[in-house]
Length: 602
Image (tube, rainbow, N blue to C red; front, side, top):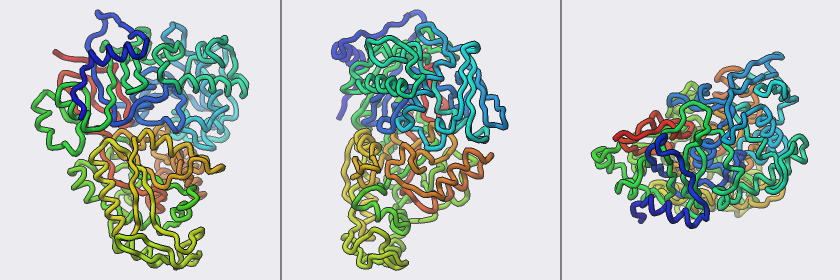
């Protein structure tokens, strides 16, 4: 059990351990320190804002990097997920050439060293992306940057650039799912291939851009050096890193006094505090060690205590989905997962009503596909609003026996009729194969651990045996995402579940509800190597066909063919916010935080 964090002592100890010095800010301009709780077992592990799938957790993307480096377009407005032009560096794109060319004008932002943010900073990002597309967590084959046929970054108009694409996109699809991936990065400081070498124009060749990426990637993968490394001191966002402890993940952010965007910070410091479990976080919250934390669902009965001790309790909606992944490339069980009837049987064995009621105490809600039931949106279809595979062990057993399996309740099912006929086990499944799987489940959340136990028990009612292997969420993610389906390296996992709050699948950097990055063939986060030409065609249509119809078709396909197994969704967290801390509401369903808006009242 973790006792209250004495933040002053921790900061002093970490300062000594890091060998660095905290960045000080003017006491007359900034006031107060806000203490923000990170999700259980989740911390920043990578600082370069060109993040690979192996590092792409919610803390990394939405509560760390984007506080230092602002994307071209900011998504999150008034508690919704839409584009926020006020907070965007780019003005609204202007389309020409039959919709194939987008011309964008930059606002006059400055880097913290005083130099302007220009189109050259956009060019560096895109050159690295074109050279190393698979290293970025948002990459989808066929989308940006491979769909760009030409780029123009005129030196004579440094605040304007144009991109021409290989076809006419819908304005919504181009902005929300393509231009959304671009971030300016400081070319004058980062276009280098070594720490001692001079800054150049290396990125203008593919080999040079690769060398720049390799250097920045290596620097970013060394968290112990972040505080002192001059690379990461050049920022255009409202915050800069003052202190980072590579052992615990504790970090301290201070205002960027040169920030030139809207809403400059008034806080003197933001402390982001890591926890090994939600229990440890709640103990710190109860003892007054946090200004902005979360209430675990298992402790929902404590809400009255908190609201009578100067805290407010507010659900934080998540614009995303909750499911567990199946590894179609696994050499032993991949052929089993490729059978639709197997996935339908597995989905029939997820008792969502029971999990919502008994595990999450009624604060979760069912999930039947990629579009959440909450928050409401025009993208949720009638088909996805109702469970196509409601809980039924009887129906699950029938599916298995009718396809050649000998079902053993509380045992392990065995294939007795191999083959590809309608009443046989299916392609690639040999006689004697068993429905015996290992599931990686994240630690740190008692309610999630209880959910896994419920599913393990329910699956046994149809003879599907599940061995649970629990590890920290960051560890599982690092194991699962790097799977190389060409070589088989890293593909031995079978089922993975990152369900605890803080490790949701959020629609970013594709903000419209496409599942391209997770289920599109070759998608960077498609760790299980699912592939469907029919789904790929539906995904492609989301970029070119106007309106919500293509997204609805894509989502209905996923709900029907269950390429992953849906489980109850819930708010990202039940935030517990000090009544003295203002400016934190409404909370962003894209999971961004806005500490530059926060301030304390006496």
